[in-house]
Each structure stands twice: as structure tokens, then as C-alpha cells.
Image 1 (cartoon, chains in turn red, purple):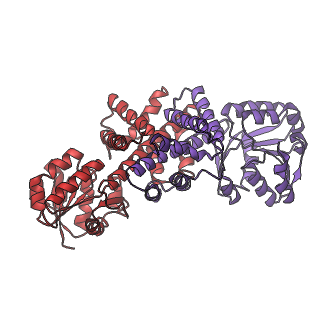
Image 2 (tube, chains in turn yellow, orange; image 1 turned 120 degrees about the vertical axis):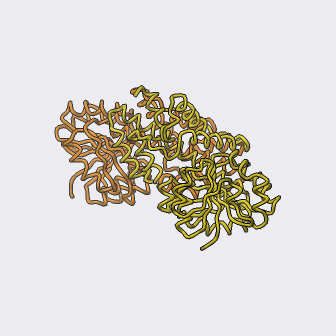
Image 3 (cartoon, rainbow over the protein chains, first blue to last red; image 1 turned 90 degrees about the vertical axis):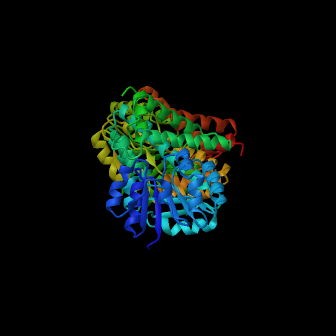
Amino acid sequence: MAEKIAFLGLGNLGAPIAQRLINSGFEVTVWNRTISKAEPLAQLGAKVAENAIDAIEPGGIVFSVLADDNAVETTFSDALLQKLGSNGLHISMSTISPDCSRKLTETHNKYGASYVAAPIFARPDAVLSGMGNIVVSGEAGARERAKPLVQNFVKGVFDFGDDPGAANVIKLCGNFMIAASLEMMAEAFTLAEKSGIPRQSIYEMLTSTLFAAPIFQNYGKMVAQHTYEPVLFGLPLGLKDINLTLQASAKVNAPMPLADLVKNRFVSALAKDRAGMDWVALAKGASDDAGL
Amino acid sequence: MAEKIAFLGLGNLGAPIAQRLINSGFEVTVWNRTISKAEPLAQLGAKVAENAIDAIEPGGIVFSVLADDNAVETTFSDALLQKLGSNGLHISMSTISPDCSRKLTETHNKYGASYVAAPIFARPDAVLSGMGNIVVSGEAGARERAKPLVQNFVKGVFDFGDDPGAANVIKLCGNFMIAASLEMMAEAFTLAEKSGIPRQSIYEMLTSTLFAAPIFQNYGKMVAQHTYEPVLFGLPLGLKDINLTLQASAKVNAPMPLADLVKNRFVSALAKDRAGMDWVALAKGASDDAGL
């Protein structure tokens, strides 16, 4: 268990994942653009690198949880990939476009390194309790090497085969379905509220019966009670993900009118100065429209 | 357990509910517009009435599971309500408008009878296995008299108070959320399919993790496999319910853009000659749009 790991990106999700790896006994070197975020992990025993490239070991393992396509492409520069080199493995957990994963696989292979797309479904507290789920795709050998590593911090690992973009498609579909669930509950709870029924009552009935799933129980409570803080996944990130979904759907000619609707809810939320709220705040749109 | 019950309406849901009541030991008199549907219940011991009014006992209990507002209002004529009379109780299980329940409460009260709205969430097989859930609302005394009766065929009873329309609002919200879930899965599975991922794979991943709820597991399988028969809840009934939802939302000024989207999916399905399919066939819309 003394395998060395480089961990790039210590945001709301990256930090607890790095923490789980440290607690599992790995030697972890962390890097984050804003270096102060590395401090709590340093206290747990992580080494802190000043640059992404300094965190990497030749032929080693590197996890990344970064903001978007551009951040991953910029960080995984030719210089970094040259250092990672032969037998190096990049486990790429950011929510990025399928095409970005496909392109990164090519640039990694040019230097003998491997790339696995491994986006995670988990809020930060679910990472710490090991209740998240991860989807992986990419070269077979790299997937098999990645699986026991990610099993240190998730409950389920789902394999989507050779296409490195496949896992990203699944992640985008899942996030789209969560956002659509927020809109669905917002509309239903608002109709109930305006009909004289407490939001909490309809929430409790539906999420203890037909919709008894974590998404509806956890997010539904926030929608019912209009709880949009603390920010575990910011509203602008929600818009970023739904834009990636629509971009992927346009690429393969698969119209998604519900994704369009949800996207416009996010855009409207930004127009109403809600960028500082959790993405659940898209649910305020239905209340606004109803004059509440 | 020898209480006498009149049961009006033996469709896909009414028949199994009547069957459960017969099996629970009640003396049940059934009526259906198409009388041949009463035959299997007669073999279980039900009496069969030729007219709704003949099925009723003065001061007795009557269940109804009828097609729409008009069918309930026509069947519960002044003549029938006069016969039902004082101490009579109508347990109204049809999916009808909240306003129809409010109006029926008044006409019932005129003849001394009581009205309870009690729509059920269950497919026919869930009724037979007693796994459904029911929402009740209306006068307090009538609700308390209805509860032990409905507990003969459902798992959960949820009380929404004095407004007889409240239970209907909850039922419409629930059916809207199911229809929206169908659209949501249809769009996500279609994006996956066009990206080279089997529909079955994304279905299995999402419904064993984030969306591990009966609605997604049961309906999702049908969406993944394009199974739109047998018809347990016909597509025109789905459109009827979403129209009732939009009518209720217009009444209280609560815009529901997602309900509008789903309604247009149903309308398009009718345009494509899918009236004979289960309402899950609204999911074909996303595949059509993607040229599949």
C-alpha cells in the first residue's frame, strides 16, 4: 500500500478523495492552483508540490479533479506527459467532454502513458463515507490498473469499455438527470404549494414511495425547504455540465428538449444573481414564475 | 368483515382492487359500463349490478374507479346520491381534477352523503400484491372511515387533510413526475445510444445507484428496451392526466414548462398512431427526434 500517487485539483470533490487515499496508506503528493487548499491535506501527511509537473513521478499514477476541459488540457501539457511517460497512468475524474477524453488519450499515448476517464457520482460527504459511485472507460489494461485504486474511496465501480469518452457521456447523462429531477420537483412542489398543500408534505409522500431514491430524498428536501446553501456544487458548475451535455448531444444529433429547458433555468438563475448558490437553486425558477 | 361494498368501474385498476376487497371478505356488488368485465369477479363471488344505482345500498359504501371527471359526475347523479343518502360514503379513486372532487363533495353533502378523494399510485400488479400507495383527502370523519377499508389493498395511506381536491393534486403531481421521468430517461438513454453505449448499460448503472427507485427501475427497463406493450396504462390516459395537471396549474397560476414538454410528447405520440401503446411510449419521441 505504499504506492505513490500524484493528486491534482483539491476542490470540493478533489480534497476528500485525496484525503481518503492518504488514509488508505498511499504516499500522496498534492497540487492545487490555489496552494492554500493543500494545507489541510499536508497536515494529514501529504506532500505539497508547487507545480503540477513536480507532483508527478515517471511511470507513476496521477489523479486529476479539475474544473473543465481547458484546465485538464492545460495541466496535462506535453512537458508533464513526457515526465509521466511510459507506464504512467492518468485517472481523470473531472467532468469534461467525451471528446476531450478521446483527445487526451491520444496525447497520453504519444508519450507512452495511459488515460482512464473516471468521473465520480458523489457529493463531498458521500466521498468521505465511501458511498459514491464511479464510471470508468478507456484502454483495458489501464482500466484494470485503475479499479483497485478507486475502490479505496467509492462503493461501486462501473466499467463502460474501451471508448475513453463513454464514462464522460454517462456522467453527463447522470448530471442532466439530476438537474431534470430538480426541475421536476420544483414544478410539482410549486403546484402543490399554490394549491394549499405544504411543500414538505408532498416531498415526504413522493420520496417515501415512488421516488424513494437518494437523489429525490436528499435534493428534494432542499427543494422543499428552499435550502440553497452551503454550496457543495455551485450553480455555475451545473450550467457548465448541462452545456457539456448539450454539446455532446449536438455532436451525435440527439435533441434533448428537457436539457434545453434545464439549461435555461440555470441561465436565468445567473441573471438573478444566484451564482453563489448551490445548483439546487435552479428550483427557484418555478417559484419565481408562479409569483412566489 | 361482512360490510357491503358497491364497486363502480372495473378497468385495469378497478378490477384488481375489487378482487382484493372480495378476497378480504367483503360482500361486493360490482358494476361496469361494459358488463362483460364483471364476469371474472362474479366467479370470485361478487354480485353484478346492471346499473350503478342498483349496486348502491342506502347509507352504504361505494368505491369508484372511473375514466374521467365526466364519467364520475354522470355516474354520481342526483338519483344515485339520493339513494346513497345519509351516512353513505363515496371513496373516489379516479384520477380527476381537484375541482371535480370539490364540486362532488358539495353534491354529496346535499343528500347527506360523504365524499373522500382517494387516488391510488399502483400499476395493476402492485394492487394485487398490495404494494400500492393511496392519498386521501376530504371531511375528517369520512377519511377516518375510509382508511381501514383502503388498507385492505394498499401498503401506505397518506392523509392530505380536509380539502377534497388535495389528494387529486398529489396524484396529478405524481403522474406528472413519472411522465417527466420517462422523458428524462428517454433523452439520456438516446444520448448514450448515439454515443455508442448500450441503452441497457446506462439503465443498469443509473437505476442501481442514484436513481434506485421503483419508477426508474421498472419504467426505465421498458424505456431501455422499447417495451410498450402490454398496455397497463394507455397513452391517451397519460395525456388525460397531464392535461388535468396543466389545467390545475393554470387555475392557480403555476407555470409548468416541463409538463408542457411532456404533454407535447403525448400529443405527438397520438399523431404517430401510438394510442394503442402503454404511456411509456412517450419515450419513443426522443428516439424519433434523433433519427433512430
